[in-house]
Amino acid sequence: MINQSFIRLQQALINVTLKLAYVSLCLDNPLISITHCKTILSLSISYSNLNICPVQYTIIALSYAFEALTMTDQSEKVFQIVTPQQLQILVTHLQQSYSESEGLLYQQILLLNLSIVHLIQGNYEKSQQTLHHITQNIHQLPNQIKPYFLCVQLYLLLIEGKSQQAIQLISSIKIQ
Image (tube, rainbow, N blue to C red; front, side, top):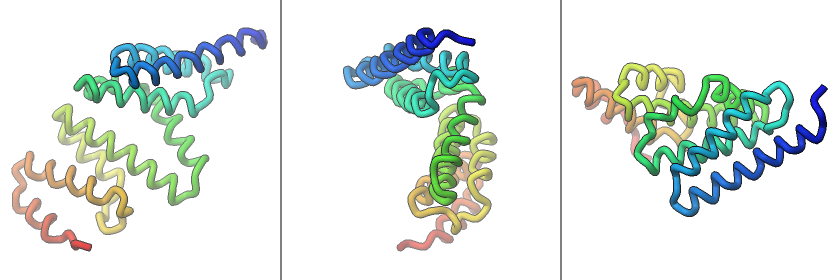
């Protein structure tokens, strides 16, 4: 059995480190923030079976890391920081914490952002595959993400030289 004082000490370390990551972002020092986020994310994996790091802290650390990487034009490095296990934790938390429709919306937003990361990296096939995980029917998308989904889809069609399909996509959009 793990000593309770050890658990409290690790929880305090994670709490302070998360706050340092936030302060670093506020002070426009994203590199320091990334370092703090990496610490939190590695601790969250190390102690995942002990429930030392609340899932909310992992989600916040992921958000701060994404923001810091974006600030430094290094968004392609997101997959060097985030593990599949942490992404699964995020998806599971979304499924459990929100109503079915809200959870689905947040999953779609997460997948759309992931598609954009693939797009930025120049991995158009993975970007397209990720879009297909969101929906097969554009008209069923929630209005909150539909314009972003359509922009990514349109960009992919144009970059792949599928101008006729791009024109069809544009003509199928109903302006509301």
